[in-house]
Length: 122
Image (tube, rainbow, N blue to C red; front, side, top):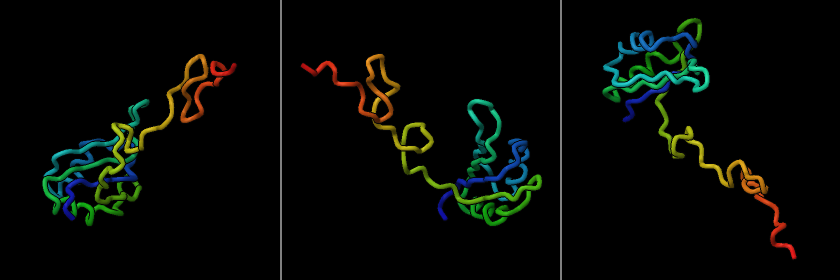
């Protein structure tokens, strides 16, 4: 394994960054820890990403913590996958095709036909 970033899933929603740091720093020096939060509510989504200084530390954390209980929940710990879809801040989703929300004349829409063709009729 050459990746030093891990995914930690099935976290209790009440898990604090300090609690997670304390739990995972036993495996090596953590350079970044990010609990993912819902943009609308600011609440935890129940997963996090942790980046270690070395890939060996990350591998040890995966082997040591996967399946361990935290707050009566079995953690799911794995190597973080690279985001290969791209997509400029859309969470890895490919960009949408088609127009936007549309205008008063029926243009746009989410990949639909767009506006009507009344202007081209004779």
